[in-house]
Amino acid sequence: MSLLIKNGRIITATDAYVADILVEGETIRAIGKDLSLHADETIDATGLLVFPGGIDPHVHLDMPFMGTFSSDTHETGTRAALHGGTTTVIDFVLQKQGHSLKDALADWNSRARGTAVGDYSFHMAVTDFNENTRAEIKHMIENEGITSFKTFMAYKGALMIDDRQMVALMQEVKKQGGMVTVHATNGDVIDYLVAKHRAEGKLAPLYHYLSQPEMTEAEASGRFADMADYTGCPAYIVHLTCEGALNAVRNATRRNQKLFVETCIQYLILDASLYEDDFEGAKWVMSPPLREKKDQTTLWAGINQGLVQVVATDHCPFMWEQKLMGKDDFSKIPNGHPAIENRLELLYSEGVHTGKITLNKYVEVACTNPAKIFGLFPKKGTIAVGSDADLVLFDPTEKHTISAKTHHMNVDYSAYEGWEITGKVKTVLLRGKVVIDNGNCLVEKGYGKFIKRNKVSGTI
Image 1 (cartoon, rainbow, N blue to C red):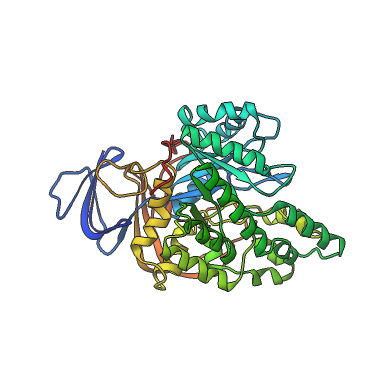
Image 2 (image 1 turned 120 degrees about the horizontal axis):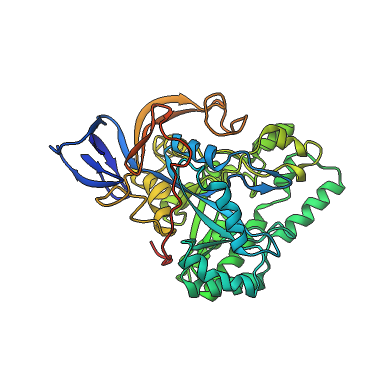
């Protein structure tokens, strides 16, 4: 089948122009002005923006956490992502301590294969680095196409690795052509503060925030940067939230170190005042927590300065009933919030529409940089001849309101309930097929493919 998209304003990380796009099969065949080519179907995109499909490199689907599972499966989560213009997600496989990476991958494959609606890949979270794990790194990169390895500097006893393991992992991953990513917060200090607040009877969601002060993230980010610099391993900080942590990255650039940084949409537009509303604040309990207004200013500036390369979501939704597990103790509230469907529209409305970032920067941080950093480019993340025809037709003027009543995520509340935003996803193509059209999903579960990724270079 062939499809001709006419008269759209094509936006990439570098260009903006009106042209036509011819799609044949799963890829883009031609781009040009007033193409007079035959196609089986034609879409008139006059007045619409045409973006590459969004890539969200930080999602947690059907993830076991704190005695429960995140409420979006690979089916519901990737379908919701498609509704919001995100055509590819990268989920996290979590190694269980005492078990192999191979076992963990088999577990996640059993949930995702045949159920995902949109395309997906995996990061491998290493929680128990030993000689057996070391021997699996090469296989994951060369045979499975999993080239990034997540580490945690918090959650002791479940996910956290120590600095000894971190350096050893970095050395092996660098040798094999991969990248190490990190949840950079000081777990020991956080555990101390959590215990202190609980002992004092301070159990409201506000104390989740107060147990993770900016210092805990700034210190861990700097320590991670130092270890990455020492080993020479390509490195990436996930969900960076605050001025102190970004300043640690700035300091690393003074020694000519390249360190990739991701923030998430919530840290750009929400702040810690939400925790003051009694237990309602549980909706925004995530780690790291929401920060202050000054941190939002820092993050927007960091995007424009090139210090922050990616805007993701850390999508990890829980039903309200699951959040109520912590109604008497903030430390028992499952951490995470829903955003996989809202990212592109919120980033456009709060970023482009308000003048904080340009259209090109928008595509860069939401589509192109994730593809380049994680070995998906140019198959994904851009609009070019030969690339996958992952395309979003977007109305930049349509106003609408976010609500749990209309979203497609499997969660019974919205972190952005009642937000009036400008800009709406109208049509989405995934590998040449129209998958979303005016709010309707036109494909079934199993359409999504696992995407093997290339080795990473540490540059973009």
